[in-house]
Length: 424
Ligand code: ARG
Image 1 (cartoon, rainbow, N blue to C red):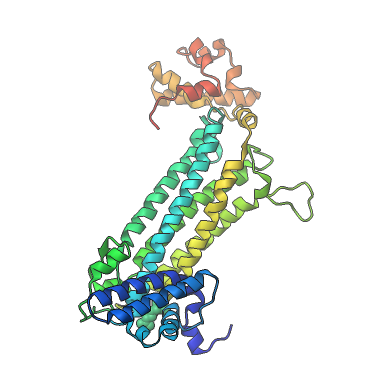
Image 2 (tube, rainbow, N blue to C red):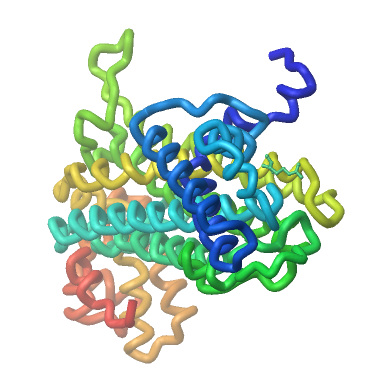
């Protein structure tokens, strides 16, 4: 789209979603200016009343007249509503510390929302795990049958991955918990402002220590985007697994109808679109991180207008992550697990082989030697199209004299699973 230079510089089209945070920051700033007697109390009162009336109207769906960016748009509207008092609001402040504050307010709010949504997915995982507590499935490595495991063990692995995602989110929250306002353009201000009062008002636990850093840094946004990218990697793996598991070949799970869609040509199809789109949207979240890191890498101190390019990736990542989490939770919760298909799958792939090697090791055979013995047994069975449990005690003993009746007993997936004693 063609643009005039003025349109090109503008950011209102995307940063207007900061409006409630910008207003909140301005209310705190005006209250502080008044308490410090930097502006007359009656002007501060009018400013705060005006800002609240704008916020009210915005909440009702009213549209703020467009300006270069959200900060100018709100200031102009404030002056239109309250007159000359509004012209005092920007005392001792710059758009640079203002926008940095808006971003941190926005971040803290949205990190909390993301953490809540992650918890919903964890709860959904816990629900299916509990519903299917005793279901046994083949565990995979390299997508090859490895050892029998509990389905609940497998699915709960994702809950733990998500727990670390929450930790990364909380780290980003903590880093964003430092108030930039009061740093002005870069150098601070000669007005006797009270930054700690503003911090208390806005619920920040500390104020920034270096005004140049506070106005020119966006690494906290990058940190949040990195946390989003990793979260999406985890969600994408889970989504991929659901795609595989819901295929005809696996049929381990059935996704509830609303999370699938039909084909325009093939009448029989139920495609796992929701899981696929989660997997696909992961690309967006990665892109957001890379785009911000690339914006940041060449910027000298302090504020440069390039920093305005922090917002599109930030907002896009938040939308992406919130969207994916909000469909993931009900998709998991409503999916049906097929214990029979999972159990049948345990019959192939020699899942008990490791347990047999462990058996020999417990009888004093060095593990590496036992591993070789069982490898031979598997080859023997493969050639004859039989399973390990089809071998008689006599045949077992031919492979190794230390095999006894107990060895026959462990040759079911249930026994193998129950034999596991290690923590975790
Ligand atoms: N829209 C700008 C941004 O998002 C606001 C800060 C403008 N500051 C300036 N010195 N031009 O970064």
